[in-house]
Length: 564
Image (tube, rainbow, N blue to C red; front, side):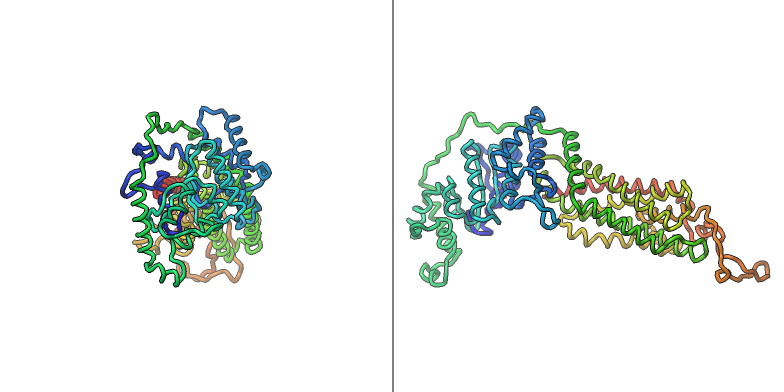
């Protein structure tokens, strides 16, 4: 216990094996801990922020933790039975079918107290020997906070060691604790039984008034100097007070005999294999599908957005003519399709993965699963949505805009749009995996998209590209998509001219009136569409970019969690 910034969470991170100490050693039952992983094998860490997927029910959340955490030697029915025990232990039966919820996403869920209990319960399914909790009562009212600590007391009675940080507990909560470690500015000012803490500070000249909350007294009168009059009376500032309290405690602790005896039978149990990589992939894929189909911002919003976009495009470029003016219109809609497909897929990944990433990092740190199964499960879950929704959108636009109504053209047109969305999804995963803050990724995304858009072949043809920028078009998915879409549409297209579109030019010394473009191939040749970039080449290039992006994103995600 201690004020904000005293070092409570830092100490908890060291004890739980999540942060290596700069000096000193960590002992368990009087034996030095050789590896932080050993303490992590027998403990769980409940963070202050409750990171859980909003659209999972309480039961699904706890059962998922049981299926991933418990050893492979347990049957599925035994794991689910253990999850049921935990649900009953934490009193979550009434809300077991309720979503966790997220007010920001307008998903109604459990209350704050229930949410905290679920967060602790999902960590306790593996029957840990030690539970570390970082401020479990933060943000809860006094009654809910008391009920949470009461459950922790029940776990202690079952033989579990519970180590928790807490800021300023009520008197009822304070009485539930067995031992107290009081910290101020990274220094210990008291460590011992809670019942002896009041007497210790009374002997130092800090008597606690009767019927007064000891925790409040420690904060208001011992760890801080109080008002100006109190400061004048005590005659030393905050640093001097901390130093005085620390020295007093060191004198007392030096006179106390050691109370922990070495246990000859002590052994940190080996970490029994939990779920296999394939089992993790299967469970995480199921969870991702539930999250995607239940979240209104994932399916319904994206589907509605794409359909609305398709209808708007159709109303603007309805049934294009085959005249010369129609060429510019065709170029505009083809480029717009490429640019929108790229941007919508990138931003879609950032908006959805950003909400899930904190949950993934928390689960990874607690050993629920590894990066590979999670990443593959997410990609496999998103793949159908990036296939179905663009297919419907592309179909609407293909027939309403009036492109060449041939089966070959239609199938290749839709395939290019789908592959472009996949490439955009891969780039979005890279951005979401590189930056630790999704807000930064959202700011950087336009800086990445704009150069790729400018060198897509619509604004600047290949012959006009400066030499030092020649590499950019080859890494632009929009370049391949726009080239493929234009080739599909203009190949075999018969163009016509209205009278006002005819131009006069000299041919063999004679003046003639001609139509600029009679065939789509003439347009492709005039505007330097690379002959080597055939439709299959562009499609294969998009596939290659998608696979390369997935590889980079996976490596970046592994690096991100390693840095955490």
